[in-house]
Image 1: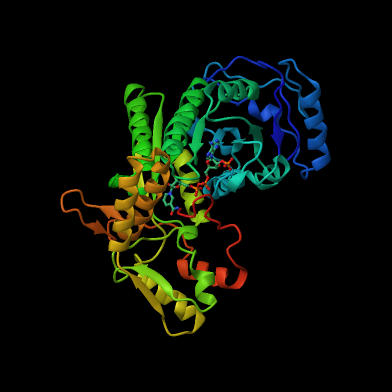
Image 2: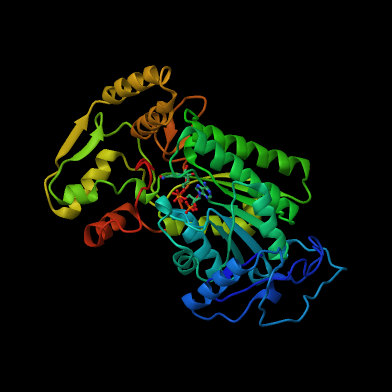
Length: 422
Ligand SMILES: NC(=O)c1ccc[n+]([C@@H]2O[C@H](COP(=O)([O-])OP(=O)(O)OC[C@H]3O[C@@H](n4cnc5c(N)ncnc54)[C@H](OP(=O)(O)O)[C@@H]3O)[C@@H](O)[C@H]2O)c1
């Protein structure tokens, strides 16, 4: 049985409610599934959970407030961009991540029909239950499925029973490990492309990363491979498919790790002179808003979109100075030679030849080294120089405001996760 948990209310769907009409629907049938928003009720979910356990067949149960059949205008070819958001079905994979959660929230706020795919245990180290996930993704129709298995994902999309217009992927390996990066940043994301296309998706928005410009790490190579496949798909089916590849600079969570330590009196640690790299940090909310813009904006079609937050680019030294400024203290820095990391990576690279199990440890060392020395800004491939001026800015949230908030409220919601690298 397939069940859909909506955080507004329960929505369950009949199998093959109607055939897909991916190009000629004036009214996506998804609207027919929606029920009036009511606050999430955990007892409703437990009822559904019981239903799941007690039924072994593939039948799909449905509860609908509005049972009127969807209206289909066969005469009018439609681009989803001509419809209003309420008639556009957006599938979000990676919906439970740091950025994904904000993307779902933003899309719901803008009035889209949001279908969020999630795992039954989601979040960092799977700490969030189904009920917690439903609360976090309030306003979306949440489907518990497995993006790493194409059959599972396709079955879920079959069960949803309405065409998908746009796929937004915020999937990412939670560890950055070698195999997991290929499994998630490439394969699972590709699954969502294939399954989404099969169910009508005409546009794909990918959360990538600005650092893929200089690919030295496995997750960057995995992302680049997926980016290339999106471009190929758009090239091969120019009239029916497009993409927007979003390559953000650093997230706030990646820069906040030292705030509480410095507050406790510890020095701010940085590599070299603190000027080896720079970035234009962007908040989850601002990035989610930019990603949501990519769903409909014509000017973001088939674009690779590097994006940073507002204001000037900041080096680690400047970030530390901002922090000490907020605390009203004299800056106290601990400068670590970058050679220390090179040595550690050299040792791990040597050991991995004899102990393959150290593969991920060696990769994490390289990730740390990369972020310690490479700027998250536009890279000029000819000169090899990073340019703050050429890196576009978006949004309004500043790192200083973020630091202020963390000093006041702590890092809740900004946890780095499995490997505490990114
Ligand atoms: N950190 C930075 O400063 C920075 C800067 C630029 C770009 N980026 C890019 O942004 C991305 C990270 O975004 P984020 O921080 O929002 O990621 P995140 O919080 O780690 O979220 C990852 C998402 O992918 C899902 N996922 C991971 N493994 C899965 C699996 N095996 N099966 C099903 N779902 C799985 C997670 O689901 P669960 O909740 O179920 O685990 C979650 O929804 C990366 O691609 C990174 O390169 C990061």
